[in-house]
Length: 423
Image 1 (cartoon, rainbow, N blue to C red):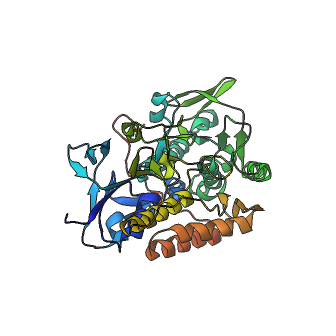
Image 2: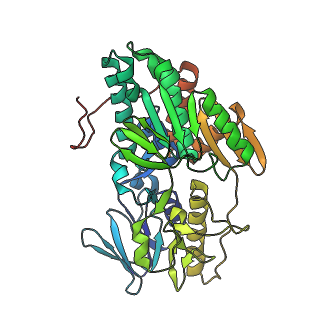
Image 3: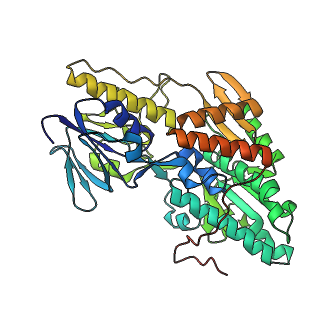
C-alpha cells in the first residue's frame, strides 16, 4: 500500500468509525474490518425491536459514512486472531491483513454467565438481526393470543419478561409497556390491554445501577405507572423455551429478552494481555496495551479507569471520545509529537423509559420526565450519523408522539429453522 503507515481498525461501531473519520485527511492507509457492512446505532435497537423504527433508520453502510478516499478499504469479515509480533490480524476465511497500527474496537456481546443454553430462548439486543427476531417474537405472540378464547391459555403470550435493569432493559420494558398498554392493543379484538403483564427482572437491589439513587427510583416508579412490574433482588436461575425460573417461583412466557450484563469480544484473548472478569483488556493511559505501543483497544473492549478509579462505562460517548483521541494520537505521532493521556469528559448519562418519559444526570444536575426525554431525543438525534437518518428518525418520533401510532408491524418469517412460527 505504498510508503504510508497502515492503520487497521477492527469494528465499525462508534469507536472504530471515530478513529477512521479523524484519520481521513491524514497520510495513512486505513482498513476497517467488521462482521457486517454497516455502522449500527445500538442505543436505538430496542426501537426496532418494538416496531417503532425500521432497521434502515439506525444503520448506515460504513462505506457511505467514510466516503471515497485513496488508501481506504472496508472489509467484511470476522477477525479471529491478532499476531502482535508479526503485526497482522487473521480473518476467519484465512486472509491476513498486516498493520503498522492496530485499533481494536470489537464491542461486546451479551454475557449469559456460563448458561449458554439460555441464549436460544432469551435473545439479547446487539444487532439488527437480534432486534428483528425479538420483534417477530412479540408480534407472533400477540397473533397467537388473538386466536385463543380462553384467558388462561392466552396469559403466557401476553406476558413479557425483560431480564436486566440497565439502560437497555429499562428502555425495552418501557417500550413494551407502551405497546402493550396502549398502542398496538387497538389492533386486536380477543383480548384487552389489561391482560398484558410486563416484568423487568434485576438481580441487584436497584435498576439503573450506576445512576444516582433518586433517578433509579424515579425510573422504577415511572415503569410501574406504565404497568411494568419491577422485580429487584431477583436473580434468574433458569430459562427454557417458555419459562423463566427464579429461586422463588417462575413466569410462563415465550417472550423473554436478555439485557443483563455484557462480556467483551472473545478476540481479545488472542492479545495475551491482562483482562478483567468480563474480558475487557486493561489499557495504558494512551489506550495501548502493555508492551505494544502500536496496538490499541477502545470502547466496550477496553478497561480504563476514570479519575475516581472506576472503570469507564460501556457507552457510546466513551468510545467516540477514545476514537477521536486515537486519531489525533496517530496523526501527532507521524509528526514526531509526544503522546498524551486519554481523559474522558463525562457529559452525563440518560435513559428513556417511554413516550415523553426519561431520566438524565447531566454533570450532577438531575432531570426526569418530559424535559429529560427532550434532552435524550436531541442527544440521540445528534449522535445519529447522516442527515437523512437524523431527519427521518426525528419525523418518526414526532409522528409517534402526536398520533400514538407505532411503525412497521410486519411478520416476515425471519425465525430460524428450529423455531416454528406457525403453530
